[in-house]
Structure formats: C-alpha cells, structure tokens
Length: 271
Image 1 (spheres, one colour):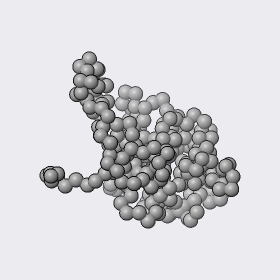
Image 2: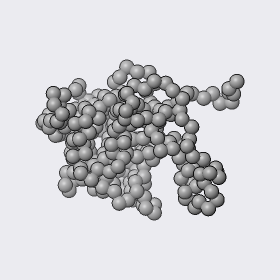
Image 3: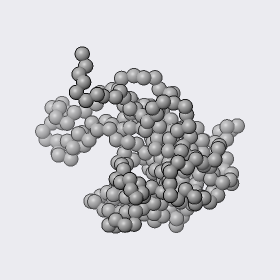
Image 4: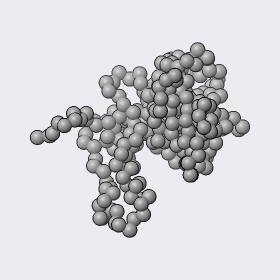
C-alpha cells in the first residue's frame, strides 16, 4: 500500500499517529494485525453482492412504489407513510461514517444517506442526521471527530455500504470480518476514527464537529440529531486510483443501491 495521498486540507501537515492496522492476509482466510504507520490513502442501477465489481451498462429499474397509486398507497395510509414513499423516489448519496468511542477505544461505523454539503468557505462544512439512540452517534459526540467514506458506485462500494447498514454492536469484530471476507483491503484503527481501505472507497473526508454553531455541531430534532462538521482534509482512497472515466459515488433510491445513469439535457425530448 502506498503512502496516503492528501488532496486538500489545512490540517494536512499534521501527521497522524501510528495505529493498529487490520489488513487482509491473501495467504489465508484470516486478517492479520500489524503495527505500522497509518496507510496514506484514501455511480442508477440496482446492485447486489453477486454482481462483479465492474458492472455492464444496463437500464435502471423503474421505482417499485408510487405515492398516489391506489394499489400501494390507499387513502387510509397515514401521512408519514405517504411521505416515505415520496422520499423513496429521490436518489441519495450513500456514505459510511466512522468514529471511535474514546472511553472504550471501540470503533464504530454506520451507513447513511442523509450526507450533504453546507458551505465551502472559510472551510468546507458538511452535515447528516442520525436517529438516536445510536452507538456511532455516541462515538461521534464523545470524540468530536469522524471520517466520511465516499463509496464507489459498483458492487464493491455497495458491499461496504450494506455491511454497515445493519449496525455494528460487536465493535472491532465487524471491521475484522469485512477484511477477512475481502470487502476491504484494510482498516486503520486510528486514534480519531477508523479509516477504511479498498476498491469500494473513493475518498475519505476527515472531519470534526463544528464548534461555532448552536449545540457545538449537534442539533436535536425529535428522534434525530443533525450533525454539523468541518472538513479538515480530503484523502484519496484506493477506489479513486483506478483508471476509469466518470467514476461517481454510490446512490440509493427505492430501497436499492444504484449507479449514476445517463445525462439529461433540459428541454430535450426523446423521439
């Protein structure tokens, strides 16, 4: 593994400490834990784990639900459920957020589709929301640091997203098993937040909670918390090094992972 390529970041000059790195052992089915400096590095079609990492072009499946269809949403359906069907028709970016609980040194991760950018200057600001209670949220709130992994829009990215979509109560073990199965090449369990390495990861954003906003970066809204963070640096992932044109981030809509489809020219009509 080559040294990490930091693309952007005012904090890039601050070297990260050495950390325990889990790497896939290609000679056996087990992952090996070694001490070394933290490695330097870090597209709409349905995707399943059985598909190859490079997917052939094919039409995107149409949405399976419609908010005003009498067969799927009768008038008696409550407004929140009707709203849910509408939101399923929108595509959302899929990222994985990682953090480490400083009290127990337990690594945490979760897949989310609420990630978005808020501002660019003076430093980039991002946000997402988490339903609470959440172990990953507890780790973010306690450590005030987290990594956002931008995933590739192929089967490798979808595998990583799906792996962390169901929770990770086991802590470290959930990361180890993903390395063992080949879903990742390695995981750096850094002091601040785990760093995922593999073909499914395009970029990693090192972030910290933004202090100069209400709640110091944590805003409670009913059963969710809006997390507001400042991007410290952008690190190129293994997936971004592939020599592929127009490689985009993983998407999610109507309960399926998806790839970016064709471009649309406004006002242009198909014959």
